[in-house]
Image 1 (cartoon, one colour):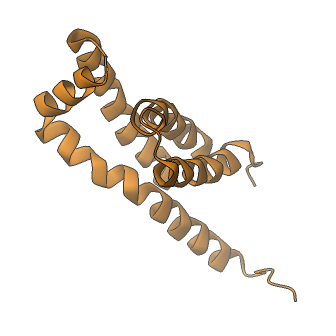
Image 2: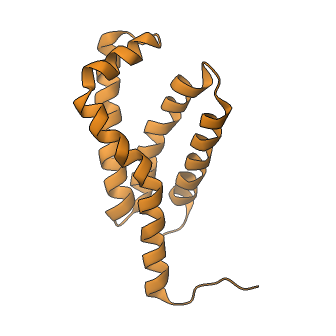
Length: 125
C-alpha cells in the first residue's frame, strides 16, 4: 500500500500541522514558567539545583521553549527549532523523570526527542 503524498501543498500543510502538534506541549508550558517563575525556581531547588543556578536555568529553558517553538513551527530551517527544544527536553527529562524514575514520562519524552531528532537530521528540501 503506497501512502506517498504527491501533492506538494498537501505535504507542506501536513508537515506544518505535525510541527504544530509536536510544539503544542512546549508552547503550553511557557505561560506557567513565566507567571510562576519563583515557584518554578523553588521546585528546581527542591531537585537539588541551587537557587541562583535554578533561576538562570529557568531563563534558559524559557528562551529555548520560545525560540525553539517559533523556529520549529515557522522557521525556514526547522532544525534550529528542533535543537532548541532538545536543549530544553534532554535535561528536563533527566531532572524530572529519571530521579525518581517515571517510565511513562520518560517514554513520552523519548518519543518527543525522536520526532525532534528526525527533524534535526532530515535534509531540507
